[in-house]
Image (cartoon, rainbow, N blue to C red):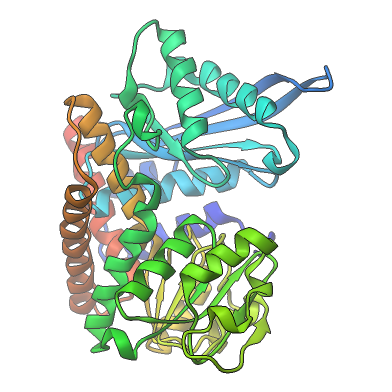
Length: 423
């Protein structure tokens, strides 16, 4: 990621592009350029050494006109307020384009969980939830997991929140373990949702699954799941990478074996041996940058922000980019890709599977219901297929890129809610 690129400025530029194409009321547009609420926390944590350490945390509730705000919490040493504001803005548009009754929010804590013990992470998580207890709730703001957070962390936060408010409110957090009120399929929902989007964009391009080559940058939860599910659907996974590098083979890989190998050796870059090749043959080690520039049909950035920039956009050869990561393409790069005729399915649509199933979890908690994984993914397929069709139609009619089309649809919906609320 290029650290010099401000993600919130990117988010505002994307909003500006939508405003130029199909404007809303100027006052509402200005309102939507500013986060509604920014919360900064100083969280005291007793470390295993006995030292009392203070961690900086954030929660940005971008706009609650459509309903309670919704968004994940990330633990990362490079969390910044600008990043959290950008992610909260993108969550606002993501919920809107998917048709969910939510506004957008995001949280983050500056920490390195890889250097912390389980006890230290638990104390940090409980401290974060305790500090936010008066600012969240099932009808106010509903956090969820994100980078380096997981169902166990949500369980700790939910428990601490319930203690703070004096009652059980499981719908306050989503992404919880099943036994704590979590939804079937939540853990793999971003990746599964991505497969539905890939299927739809392949149809738009006239590609058959077995003829379609796919490269996945980022082999964490979302990236590994989308690779495995696409492989099961007949797509050919020819390249994968993680933070330490990747591998490529025109013959394709078995993504299930790659995940197993990564768990053993620590990186997919060391997994190019014959056992993971679909049809045998040669493979080569590649960098993350090289993966982005491969001649493939579908490129799936599933890592971090600002991966496709003005520096490399002209070298992208894929027919379509499906953004499973948040903010992987900068506005300047978007323009280049559009001129090259490359379809970019934006993050606010492509990775909406996670927040959509979070909504299903919240709904089940609020109504004391429990759906099977099959029921959850049937609902998700219907929701994302419709959202893709709506964005694709708007893009074709306006002769604009899919991101601008998605932003137009999302922003207009939120603007209507702002008008209704009298903000």
